[in-house]
Length: 489
Image 1 (spheres, rainbow, N blue to C red):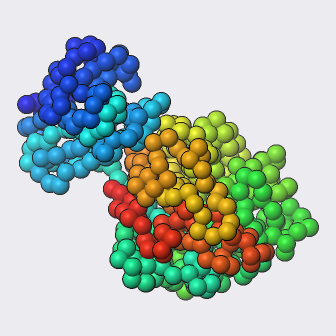
Image 2: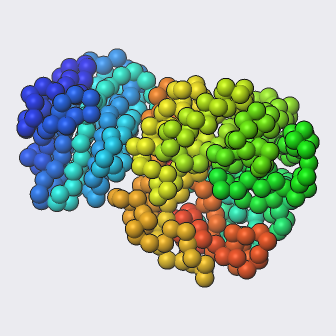
Image 3: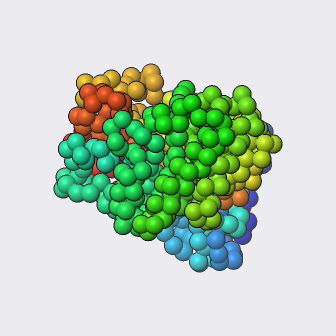
């Protein structure tokens, strides 16, 4: 055994090598081999067989200096396996592993950190697969370092209204309880709450946010406040000014943004629940407070964004200010937006991207965009929103947004297992952002179950919920086992 990883690019021996140089195999060894089509070089390791198989390709290292190490690899997978993962084992502590995301096209970089305490470690590529399942692995490195994510969060903006309308939340055993306590016990450590200025239903306003913030902090969680600067949903398709600000001049709108932001955050601080992070705007690909704050006039948009930034810092200088775009797989669009923001002097501390795999490109597209944003702008990055369905049928009379099989991401079924795997794989991509700049993930609307009166439209009490099949609580109100993703490394 050597103290450094040998043949991590599988270039020695060329295509068709049954056992790559430096590596050993266990199990159905015929399913492990090298072939052409590498990530960096000419060749790669592949696992595949025409019949069901279990195989491990591994390399034992000894003589290591004790300390923190990180395995990095580029991977692809057609999906469908019972298990397909990279592992670091026999390193002196608990085995560490990272599942391979399903990506039949683009290569994805994943990492596995470990603490070596016994001067040795085994690097392992594992497949427990059905007939025809395949993986590709290439360009492995094992170097000093570590990884992980600090944010395991969820947007719970729907919770207060759900509870008021009779919504019940149960733990996995069926015992009713506080949804926040249930999620906290699963590992959730950060809550995201949206703020509307004067919503028609009286929820998601300053008073409601203050009340829920007390509960969030009482659970020992951190708080992200998401300012929409609207009375209604703000997203790439609409950024309507609050009714109270209609007709205001541009200069007055800058004051409005400052005063509203300061007012909410200062009230939170005064009650002992200071915001840890703030989004100045929600999915502002096209700007905010249209038309004055549109991206057609970057000078004015920059002024509005900086008014929000200044208000946040005036309340608490250590609160992180994030800017949030949708379309997390859109490299060129993200570059265009943040290049303009930077050239117009917009101030911010972090970048948040929404990434829904059924809308925003492949996992490989997402990784490319996230990595690029972190490197290009020198800022930490996080997923401000993601979600995935655990079933397709509806829990109320309202049609769900994602409700047919052809809308799903290939390799991720509409099941609790599919939802679990999706969120973990997204988190693994965030964890792998170079330089430790990947903060983590917020799951969107984890508590938005089908409760009468808690529909999508605050102006219509009869509106339904199109999202309950993507919540983290089932139609029986029990927390799903997919809440395990909160314990992602």
